[in-house]
Image 1 (tube, rainbow over the protein chains, first blue to last red):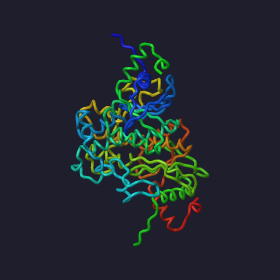
Image 2 (cartoon, chains in turn red, blue):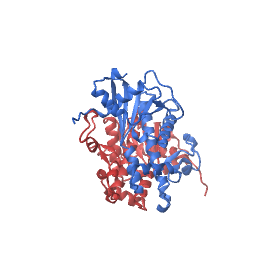
Image 3 (cartoon, chains in turn orange, purple):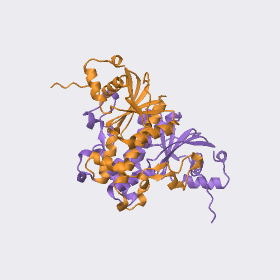
Image 4 (tube, rainbow over the protein chains, first blue to last red):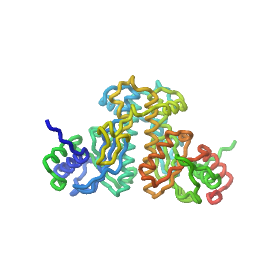
Length: 232
Length: 232
């Protein structure tokens, strides 16, 4: 067997563009269906792996990595494991889905007794992740709720960094990819809400049906001599 | 005793401006001394409390809260407590100072076997906070290193959000405040490095000698009828 190396992000984008241009229902929004775009460019591709890469995709042949974050999928798993001693990623995700982070996170209302009107902050907005833990006895910390809080914290932070990065480059279309998102309703909802909230509804968050297959498909295409123009 | 309420952020900024204009050595940079500015405006004030507030200070009388993050000082303490069962904030900070997060965090080199040259990512850059935990046995997780990793993670994330927010408004001068930073070398270093790295050295991170006293001073000034113009 001969191993040939291709750039990870180039593979990811080639596979994604190939499917975006050929599969009518590849893209979906968190709230219901979403029409396809004649040309998806320019878009921001946010790849949620162990860490996060933000790729500005200008055209079929032109992209650049414009931002990154080390708070990603592996951070969720590593933090949950450090807190709960759970030994399996799927188990950590199941815990997180079952939990309710209200007992762990501090809201605007918890701090100010209600809304903070001079800054238009509603009382139910999260003000501090894990902000309630200091006043809880360790025994009262069920493992579900901290896991849920970590999942929400990581996802919300990705959403905020995405908004700021997309805004910097004047991009309104965002594709989220990465195995971390597959079937992960809490993460998708948090990303969708963060983008909608920060952008005032101007930016659109898109998710992908063939999540997890773009890289392999892209490597196949590149190995067979396809170029960005062939794919588009 | 009659309690009179003043806006928290208005107090903070009034106290800060009063000292900025009167105390020659109030401001310091992470690396050595820093000259004072004839007029500090415009600046971004980043207040690190339980959560984070980013305040765009345009003039002595004009400021707005332009961004926020719920990953702040209480998140550090809450996460460390959830992982280690430490019962005291100072103890958590001592643990974090003694730890080395290299055993917990994953670097670019851990993932790619070296630098990732196509994106200019050096091998020693953190790629995923807590990314190594999945391959460690729970028993091998000493409490110092996860605490150190949480402190670095929270601080670095604040630095990145600060850079993106300051850039959005074209601000190059950043003041960091909040009790979380008092004597917190790891946080100050992480903030300074993040700002310098992301801005390519264009933005300046400033810290403050009378950290923790701005709010009280501002409340006193406002209660005694001082205005932004008096303070400036």
